[in-house]
Length: 181
Length: 352
Image 1: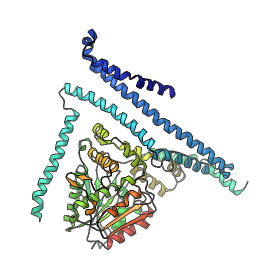
Image 2: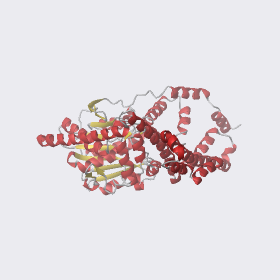
Image 3: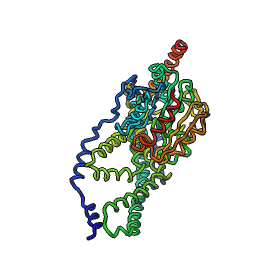
Image 4: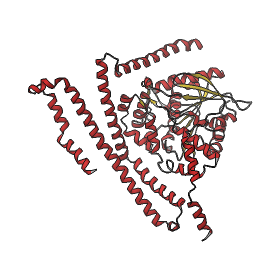
């Protein structure tokens, strides 16, 4: 896992993606600028998606690091508790099961209640959303090319509809309620 | 070998037939009936149903009760099985019960907000109940998120409410120390909603799975194997499992307000929460209030619910704490024997 993290850190350290983006934004780059102009956009997408996936990998590693650490802690608790429990000399599966569950519950509940875990969990999810968002962006661009309504356009329609429903309800209440009185 | 040793040896022997029976039962899926108390659907839209339960006694209280369920999981937990049914118990005590049963919003409901839930859907149901029973005021009774919505509604439409009964309302989230509250505070809900449009049920299952991961998440299956021959235990297990894994998504705008305004900024407690143009000021509540909290609630801390009694202006207000959990409060033998008799007693003196 350390090697993997080092590789990820190297990418961050040397800012490879940022440098690539700068290069891509050059107005011209000799003949290459002209020859690559049409597919620059697609290359850019691949670069962005890679960057998101690498960040995601980093956050997933951190998440699983916390989970694995807790697992070791829980196993340690089982060993400690079974040693200190004198009745454990007489093997009793039910008692041992209760001990294991208690030890794991204690360790994992502490982890799940910690701020460190909440942050790690949400970092992973946030990056997954970034990935979906980017895919959405690509889909929207293609829908535009095909002259099909995009999701953001549909969202606007939905928002307007919801507002219209409210307005309609207020108008309806305005004349129904005084009539009821 | 002593008798104790023999007992231990017996316990250690694995009964493979019980394991096989458990696997077979779980693989069949949870086809089990819930919500069996007879009722009529009085009103139905794409997002909710209003159920009216058939009376179980001759003399019925003149003030009807509208139960507002939460937007998380399904309302049949209030009528899970006849001997643990919150609804049935209230019916046998002579109350006229309506239940607001939320349906699943879809992606097209992205912009449905608390304003719609409270000022449109709950208000529509209150008016139907008023008209059905020819009464001016009703008792509003919420559970969990439904309690918070009932409190919001009462601040804006108190003229229609006779009593307010809340169970585990989410009010002061700064004091909520549960795992869900911690996760919510760190969640980038704006990004989630703009990307997906709704809060998908899978997100809620993830949150449930980390609540009591081993004591409930794992141990329950061991208990099931041990009790697989006990029909009543198995039925109860399957009903709760069905309910746990039956949750609708939550509309985008609604969950945004819930996380950002209520959990992150604690606006409901600060009396700054807004529904459309209206500000929710809990001080405006003057009706009799019964607030019920569970001491062992690991979904909504009791410290989060209790402040409602301090915030309202009602002179007639009561807080009752029970030694049980969030679900135990409404769907358990404990609730039937300890919680419901007290709720009924409180309501009876205020429902004529």
